[in-house]
Length: 83
Image (cartoon, rainbow, N blue to C red):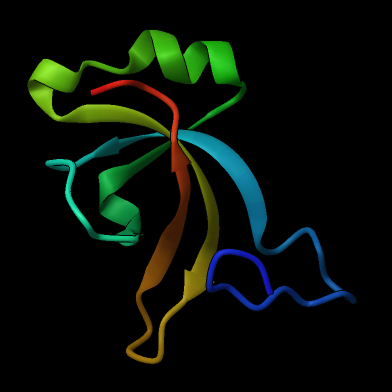
């Protein structure tokens, strides 16, 4: 288990750590719907695309993972920007 997400050892390509920009107000939430997360190819791109003034925060996330309600979620590993 990593960051509250159970990883499947037989299918590690399904849920992975990824760099992303999360479009939310920073707070105590640790999981985000897929519609709030823009996956980036690398750390530098995520940092460049972040804009904390517009609630766009660079982060490392795990996902996507399917919730019990059928939604695809990303789980926060940690924020990358100071925002």
